[in-house]
Image 1 (tube, one colour):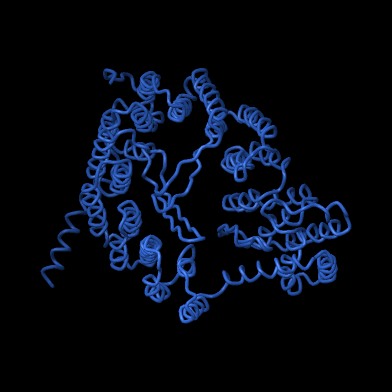
Image 2 (image 1 turned 90 degrees about the vertical axis):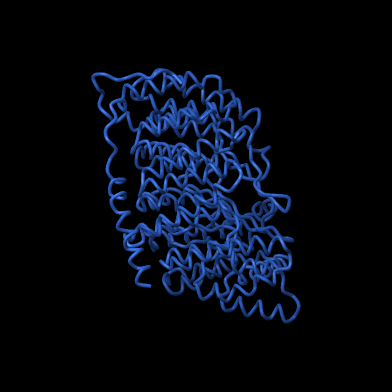
Length: 601
């Protein structure tokens, strides 16, 4: 035991010099300056001129335009203009696109980017007036087409516009306000529920100011739609009412309940119940497609508001009672039955862990246990290590083989994540080894290495963790997934050993060159569990899986070797992205008196 301890100590001590050296900035490269960066950009944009596939062409144009904007604005505007025209033409031809992720047992459709808004997002960072103009053009087209849209795409442009508004909060709040108010011209929907929390994560005060403007603007919406504004003032992760289990959002850490906004919302909601009950046209309107009748939303939400009002806003008790009487008068027997059914469904999802276990045991004894009950016990809810231990025996009771396999893999994945979070690294490794997919296991390895690096005593373990992934991925066939994992390894190694990072980067380039048409557009990994009458999905975003970010980060450490690897890519699209990303930081370097120009690749 003593010899092993001495060996481990020696190993760590030998690592420290390389760790220290890897953290030192690379020696300045004479060619890495503004002039050479612009030269590279022009060279690559010319070379990529033959790339005609719209999605790739648009991305190249966006990256090139943003790259040269400070130095050649006319050329940059030309690239942006071409990109926007291409994106509009592509949308008119293809509409909203998606890609299918999955296998023969089940799949999920994942939306592709709306390239029109990808262009506007890039322009918004440079010219907000131009971004407003292009946004107005798209929304004018949206207004003409929205009535004929299929369910699920009727608010796509609105969602994209709000994303740009949130992105611009710090850099251009005037643009954000313009876009927020633009969206206020359209009906209230779920997008505001999510957007308010996205804003609050950056600026809680801004979110509250926006909320004060939203309430009077939407005061005449139906009670169902008003409930999309119900969660924010109570700092609650779900909306009030019968649809609460359909929507969920994480609460920003700095956001707190706001009594003033709570009362303001309740005033609007109770007023709307009153006008609805007294308006014959409102009462005669059928429910919106796939939605419950409006009185069901009123009664359900009021039942949730009542204990809050009694405890915290007693001056509104009388008004709430009056509104409940009005809503109750609108209920039919069918509505009462619908309300009871939905309440039972929602109450089941709010059971404690122990109550859910008891429910499973009872169902098992009565022969009523089904796969969905077990999956729902695990999926989408964090557990403690003790709770996971109690769940584990239930995995073998899942009848459908595919559901059991996917659920078991997910179970070990999230259990490993918990162990990493709690610094139980040995457990994390044990659990991760039970996850069969290399891409999912690599995510755990990257998270584990990050945690290990926070403690200098575990730096050697971080090396070992990453090395295990490196060995495993080299045993797999060449593919886009393999290349992404190698890029992820390069990103992780960059923090501790630049030489290893360059090695993994070079291997990723070799894999990409041997893979036909590799799709490197997604930085996410998907998990899907599809059974009879139910489906559950999880998406994991993996920083470092993208060419742009990895080449940029490593290029800041060793420009020469990173550029050589970027130029070694055979695919013109990937090569352009990699070279421009590598050279990006050179724009911040002062011009040198003499810049060596290597011959074009």
